[in-house]
Amino acid sequence: MDLKPYYAVLRQTSLLRGMRDDELDTMMQCFAPRVRRYQKGEILLLAGFENREMGIVLEGEISAFKNTPDGGNVVITHMGPGGLFGDVLSGSSERSPVSVMAQTDCLALWLPYQKIIRPCAKLHATHLQLLQNLVLTISNKYFALDRRVELLICKSLRARIAIWLLDQAEHAKSDTFAVSLTRAGLAEYLNCDRSALSRELSRMQKDGLLETYRGSFKLLDKDGLRAQCQ
Amino acid sequence: MDLKPYYAVLRQTSLLRGMRDDELDTMMQCFAPRVRRYQKGEILLLAGFENREMGIVLEGEISAFKNTPDGGNVVITHMGPGGLFGDVLSGSSERSPVSVMAQTDCLALWLPYQKIIRPCAKLHATHLQLLQNLVLTISNKYFALDRRVELLICKSLRARIAIWLLDQAEHAKSDTFAVSLTRAGLAEYLNCDRSALSRELSRMQKDGLLETYRGSFKLLDKDGLRAQCQ
DNA sequence: AGATGTCTGTTGCCGTTGCAACATGGATGC
DNA sequence: GCATCCATGTTGCAACGGCAACAGACATCT
Image (cartoon, rainbow over all chains, first blue to last red; front, side, top):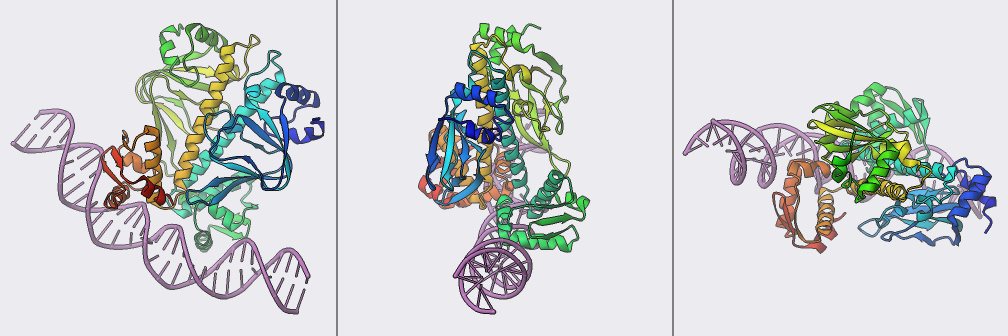
């Protein structure tokens, strides 16, 4: 299959970011990836199984979710074209902690891990860059998880909210920012009840720490917030 | 400096596991690592700073800790000879979330990340194996963190304990096992108060789920425990 | 407009758990 | 033996936050 039409998508992945056409040509020749189409609802990756390929979303949407001990599903992330998944898994001997499902009809590219980790004898400079990208990608995921743990170990809800707010403000480089998360989504990330989150945000507004309406936040007293991070 | 005397230690690292002397010779020539001695209490890696080298403990003990928002320190891990640190950090553009300190006088080997990620033109098979080891190491750290998150998002303490117990039993491949963690240490890992942990363990013993004395655990009703996981 | 559904805020209830204080028991040193 | 120290278990109290139920705001559809 000719992948040229998807080069624009590939360039958006963290793995192949910004590579030229000729570079992608070379990589695709080395990797000999396979392409597969999935129908909405089909499983691309099943929790509990090993996997030796990385997936890239070419068309459509996928979602990754965990099976909770009580049989439910918790969505971890959504991805569209350019999304990379199974990257950490494929290089490890672990069994997948998540399942990946086609959210819509979609098309996925599968890259064999062994071909990625073992550069061919030609030692293409592009391949070396790609390896660096791979490690960077995994590292970033590690640090994102680490920040999550940082949040979760805070005992008080107010502390978790304060840390999150300061993080977001730093990320947005402004004390006023908007996020696309719903309250329920934010509650899930902060690992608390939605109503408890609303209640605490109300209290924090009463205390003059911030103003918020739906997805918009305005930090009024960052020092005060920092004092709550305990 | 001649590293031969430390080859036995190097072979114990997850990065250079089981490599022959001649392979280590080659790698050390490629990496041109530096060695440095540290006095007890000296800082090897400071939280908040970037780093482009991986560290291997050759002699002595080190500890990694986080600076909590309220100024305290929380020890994350200890390492002795053969310990690898800064591996995730060195390949990322993040600033370190932990500091690393010499717990005793010690000797550390520093490998430049760029030399590791970019195999030399000779394309040594050993180097390719090492790259695979690197990705495996980082991936394993990722999954360990992921399991930690899995624990932390459980709302009830009993659920966290149950998950931990079942995990340990699986790891020990036996329903009876012992761990070196103290109650206080376990409480910290489970993110709860030490007394609350003791209390809950007592209740679980009353409920006939397990028996425990200090670091020894004996699971009596694994199905019962699984039912408590959330 | 009216109906419907979703997101958000509010409140009462009460269980779980953090915190503090104390008891016990094993280990080590003198 | 006796003193000391540390790890662990126990318990009372208070409160944080989960849960459930309801109300209001807003979007979408017909």
